[in-house]
Length: 190
Image 1 (tube, rainbow, N blue to C red):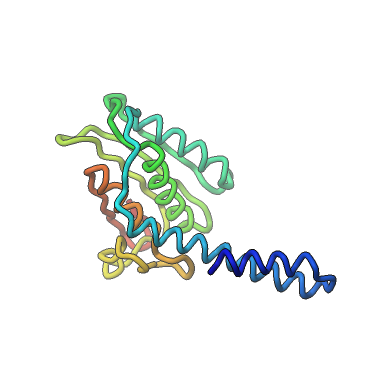
Image 2: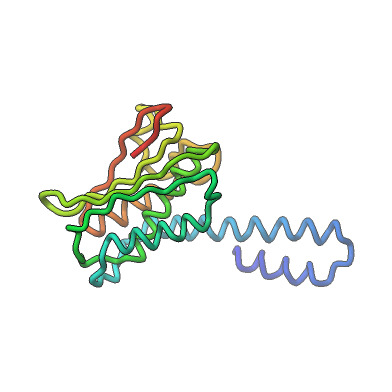
């Protein structure tokens, strides 16, 4: 249905001469695209993930994400710090899916710091694998909302669908990993 709505709206728009009507159809097309993204996100949430596992160095994956996020952010407002253990070696993983998770978490941290701040990322060898910590200095999350952080459609923000962290949870789970958050209101979230 969205494809038909979008396709016919585009066709109608190409025949309109009135600028106000063309603008209205632009708004319809933007909303169709937004709905298409939401439907894709819902599909991601319900899908059983088939990972494209290959050897990848987690620190390299994190460095790629940091480069992407540094380029996408106001570098005067946001500082990225890293403390990546040299002991971390290659693992079998889907680096693209892990990038998706890391970008999502860092983006949430940036949104939690509208005036700017620091995002720190660290890796550490632990007894049964590698622990990756992503911390922000944002507004934090109330304890009663923290327990629902990975529940679909639950969001602590005024916008968004509340699907980013549940999808991230499923991706980490598909890697046989765990994901959790700790937060102090007014001080940030890890």
